[in-house]
Image (tube, rainbow, N blue to C red; front, side, top):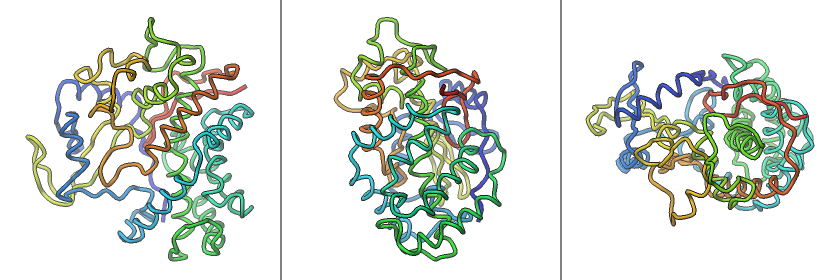
Length: 362
């Protein structure tokens, strides 16, 4: 039961995929994956009305094996209920206070801030053992997964932390968490922690950079646009997610042979919808590399090419909550003095999660 390899596509590979997507709407990579860069087709593929793809996320695959559908459903319902019980404004306040008080690595600060906001759902306010275990998991295992510091997760440490968490989880320390086989309960719980925190912490890291009065990474500010601090907070959140989606691609294994546009895809292939490329595609976005929250003011809905949370059976359960919380964080951070932030790297962290370059909070 491992936490899995760290996917290190890298910033160069990510930009190369983007360039190919601009030239061709559907193509195969050298590794054989089918890449879908047409917005309407990408949505149909992810909705998957005929059930041809596997939508079980990596979070619910202890040891790399998908949990039974009823268990996955119970876990998704637990996550829905936990998020529905949270107040985005209150959660944002917890996040902002934690980041403002932090020193050192930005990614570490963002991970701990998001976990602090989700503490009640994760049982951290009820069980000190879980609180200490989760803190160790973030520092010793998950931080490396986000930043790409290690090519492989620290499996030994991860197993020890799973074993430490398992008794508290089995004893009901996590409100509403489904009953699981004790052999996998601790691992599934820590995977749930990563599901609650990974993408949210990555989005937070980008938002902190956006609100800092400095150059943006892989984007430029619109010269005539309203400053991020004075724009509508929801528009700042949406534009941040558009330019820097934490889930920069949505990958689905193929269960049955079928066709996608001009391509024949076979059982065992992977279908990839590259949200980063779609959300910067000049066919769908004017000035696609420009950070301009004002572009969202004239739209009543969200464009087909906006897919930071995917759609369909594999869509992120936190999509609505995440936009509301990120908007509240943007509003609360903009009302404070800018954080003291210094960049340590010129390139983003690209693993399975797309995060800001390494920064230090002073």
